[in-house]
Length: 326
Image (cartoon, rainbow, N blue to C red; front, top):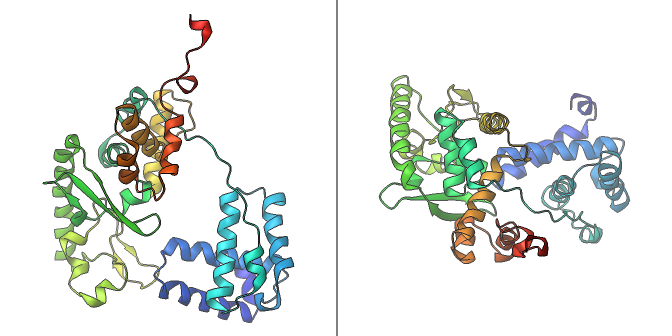
């Protein structure tokens, strides 16, 4: 916020927070989100320095978000996480009241799941690279950002596996590569390889690498294996380094394409890109695969998270036959 630049202490504080976030190798999205929440907290509190505030101000801010702004529990918890990071990792203030702040409870809701026929209708109304990405979401159970951030080296055609790096919880996992996608994906990568070759010829062709890998291995950013499977059409400037690179495709384009396909198919369920992952899990369970296998493919830390899909199996009324049907 430009208005916050009038406070002499704020820019220095936000710069310190930005440095702390980058030192811990947080994603650019987390950085932007955390900085935004700290700005809002400071503005809400009359531009007072966080070191001069405490539990009452934080509780007031969280209450404002829930009551006045009517934000979701996950949004409120994200704001709290940003402020906790500020106090503990930037200001080095470990105050007892931080542990006593109540986090909003996320309501337990059953996931939206499409039937196999509905999935076919959606995928059949998509074209090109976005259709291939949507097929991967459903066929491999990938999350949206796992799909767009996929690197060439992490696709194993021989074993028909996809290695998902640093997924939710910063964990790696292996999931399946559907046999039906092997040829389409190989043809797609041939086109991407041509694009990468053209970039190299122009003195470009480097990609962003995590955890300072580019410093440890200077040649890696230009290597084929590190390139994104789904690169953006245009080159862009890295917001941190200013380097001109080809980033991955914008995830919003896939979100819009799936929304449009749902509309064309006449499906009124409130489905999203994540619905394809929900459908992947539910359909595996319907086909008789055990829940532990599905848990590993999804990358859930606790099988209890996976068990929610047993409540949405296509059995109607939790598998109970209505007496009316007799």
